[in-house]
Structure formats: structure tokens, C-alpha cells
Image 1 (cartoon, rainbow, N blue to C red):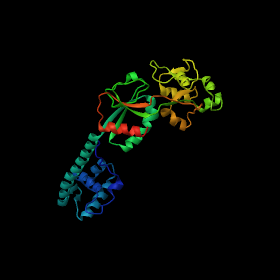
Image 2: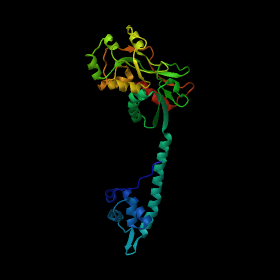
Image 3: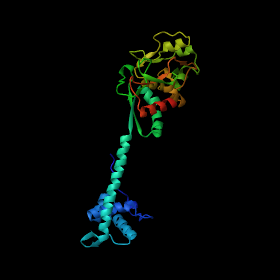
Image 4: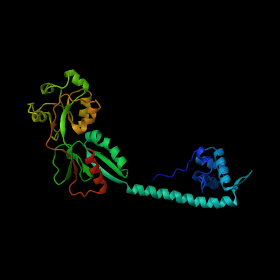
Length: 316
């Protein structure tokens, strides 16, 4: 829980009495600290300001009330009768203000809801995280926890509220909603395009290029042979150089000019728009399966999870 910050600057302390029925809260807080210490210098140390700022604030407060709040002599300062009345009232009043602030903070903390969503690192970096800032602006009362994995076999559906599968594995009993069509097309760096020939390439040129692919134990994503096959072009089953099992790393290799990768539109569209990746051919393949947002089987969605689900569907 955050503590109430009673530290004020010298300019705030010396700003003088507020217009209206009450003096400034800064001035009253300064007075309460001086009264507690019965010392201007000790109050200045606590507030981390100069002693002259404290003296000026008290003089302004006394001018506002039209009476002295402290007796001053060579032995120090003491509260006057008026000062004691004010000290008793201000001390109790500030304590109630502090408690009210703490109560509001506690209520806010209590009302904050958490939604956990599991996605691949590539989906997190290139699709989900860029959207979460807008979601948080719309729904500041909801905290979204992003749990990343790069294997459908590693999904712990018992610990998350929503998940977006890495590939094409089926999840019996899960609730699911179609986020977006799964459209796939080759991408590479602008320099790599120039090294082969001006775009758009023919499919034969593409087959002769350095094709990057994932090293996957489980074939959950479309491979080059499937992509070419969907276009009616023959390609060997083993087409493509497997360099990593992490799709984010694969995209980075493509951006660094190491070859051509298959790009899923929802993951590479922003990179293409930024010019970091380009499409060397015009062809693309849209699969029979969309990108699915899933909820674990038997899970009743709470209001926060429903809000995130509906927001993602609307902003996919």
C-alpha cells in the first residue's frame, strides 16, 4: 500500500493561505508537524525544506487566523491557546484524511482483477503486447498477466483463464472464439530481396532461395511443403532450413537477411508495415482454421475475462 506523501516543497509551504473557508492543506500539515516537534528546525528536517520556508508558512497561517499560534522566545516555541485548539483539531482531521486515502487505495487494490492468458512468445511480442496498452487504458481495473510458451504440449490450462494455441492442435471441451483468419505468406529483409532479384519473385525463385523453418518435434505449424502445395506448386517435403524452435528467433533471422520465413499475417503485418520485413512474392495461403482464442474446459468466465475476450475479438 502506498503511503501518503506529506513532503511538500518550499514553494508549496510558502504559498500562503488559500482563499475560501479553509487555509491550505499544506499549511495545516506544516503546522501539525511543527506543533508535534515544537521546533521549526525539526519540522524543516522532516519536510526536507529550509527553516525559513517553515517560518514563512507559519506566519502565513497566523496571518490567515489573525492570531499567534506559537509563543516564541529564546528557549524555543510553545503553542498558544489558539495553537493548542488548532493542533488538536488538525491532528485528528489529518489522521482522518490519511485513513480515507488508505481506504480508497485498499478498495482500488481489492477491486483490481487479474486475467491470465497464455500465448507463444511471438504472439505475445508481435500481437498481444502492442494491444494491451490500449486495453489497459480502457479497463484500468483489470491486470492482464501474459504467460508465454512455444509448445502446445506445455499449456497448463488449469492456471490460465484464456489461451491462444501455438499451432493446430485440438483442445476437446474448450470454449473457443475465432480471432482472425490465419493467412500465411513469405517474408524476408529488403536486403535479402535485393540479393535474389527485384520483387515480386516467381515461385521458382522462391524455391531457390534460402528458406527458413522451425525445428519442431510436433508439427503444429504450416511448413513450406504445405504452403507450396496449397498453391499447387510442388516442393520437396524437407524444404526449408530448420534453424530454431522459437518463431520469434526465426523472424529475427529473416529480418537480419538470413533467408525467407513463412509469416503469419497477425504476427508480421506490423513488421511489414514498418519496412523491417517485405513480401518477396504476392502469393499467400489462408488456412481452413482461423486463429482461435480458447478458454479451458469447464471454466466459467468471470466478468474481467469476458471483458478481455470481447475486447480482443473486437481488436483482432
